[in-house]
Length: 152
Image 1 (cartoon, rainbow, N blue to C red):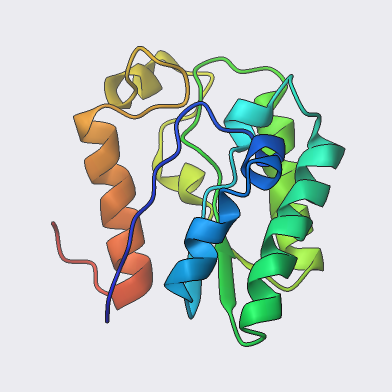
Image 2: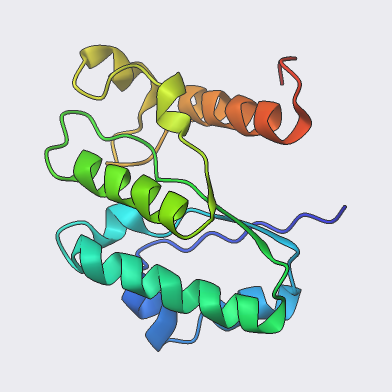
């Protein structure tokens, strides 16, 4: 199995569509797409309804190429004491379920975002995990994809 990771910093769902950046994913012709759809970058900029519509547009372009595409959505990392962002995360989960996409709620493995305990796993940049946070998130993904509880 080939795995390709793309990281787009400072990208919103709208920029991803308007710039045609999604075509990079099209070129890979994926069978499985694990997508962290710029939810945090869109927060307060694009609006959650527009974000969800943009996600629909992006996925529809990919599904046009491969109707059997397995789409898995996940939010960005938690943000300490965030106010609106957790509501966007809940909206993404609801959207995923309503549209038949798998949803990975990795927030369940983090300390509560309202607790200082989460700061142990977060970088100073909002929504970015530090090394310990990345290991925690990676372990969650490994467990999901391999159905194995073994460490990394």
